[in-house]
Length: 428
Image (cartoon, rainbow, N blue to C red):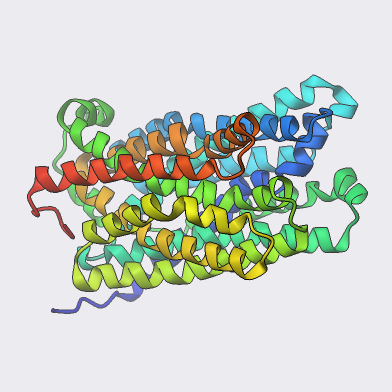
């Protein structure tokens, strides 16, 4: 196979986009990393599980508004350019993040504090709704299509870096501060830091250049077109299929990685330090594996089979792996998380399939709508649904059923994609 090495300009674009995405994703996920503490401060209740339900409901709100953010940012991104949306999205994330850091608590201003927290999460959701689809579109259009798997892997690895940074912040703060200090002021530190990182990300993105594919297309297109209308009328099958394959990734990242610290500590009762070590290690292993899988998917040019096998693994093994997590044995927990990381790495090839589903003219919009429908309607509510299932069934293994449902939907979408494109799709 002929090789197409990345140019220095391509490497610079990938690095700048990935680093900016990592800083912005850190701002978004530190909320769920510190969910148990935030729940006590802004949604005080006598029942700890009920308080956790409230905080995960607000977490879900941030995801439910993501489709709107994706539509807004992708409209301007497909119509006026990818680069400009990057600058706007990072500022929309940084401002509410630092505002949460200085927000008065329920003890000081009552229910108003809860409403303000919801408002800031809505703004964060709007931002992240345009951020990740924009990063996938922007970077993929700067490189040869034979490198798209690796490029998407780097983007997602850096998004995971944002999660790792949030987990490290939790590990350090819980080690240095008492629970009383964390509740008093410690929880504010990661949010204030996040606002500062947002400023750094803004200056990083100013160095980017516009997508060459968009610039070429811009010379030929009509100025009056509406990308969302075109996507809905001419590419609705791709939108549904794109959302279908993204559901597995959305539920996976939220349930297996973001929800896992709270699940292991609050639901299963494992110690916070042990949980932090397990989840951070699992995320690091997953990040390394996804880079290998995405690189390999470029080499063999087969992405649908990789995604299909990993999804089938989730369908068949989720219940057993959650059973392993519920055991008191550390090796059982470690092994279950490791297998989750392996399967999740296989899921990580789906963004390349998303990119191939849509033409340049509406690529940002198509990815944004598909991606954010899946994350808004399925991924963001994963912690809420998992906690609700546990509360109503009194069975700590029920979150596995939601993973299995997501895997089923993904497999159905993959079947229709393969049947529709008949292996014409890149990486089929």
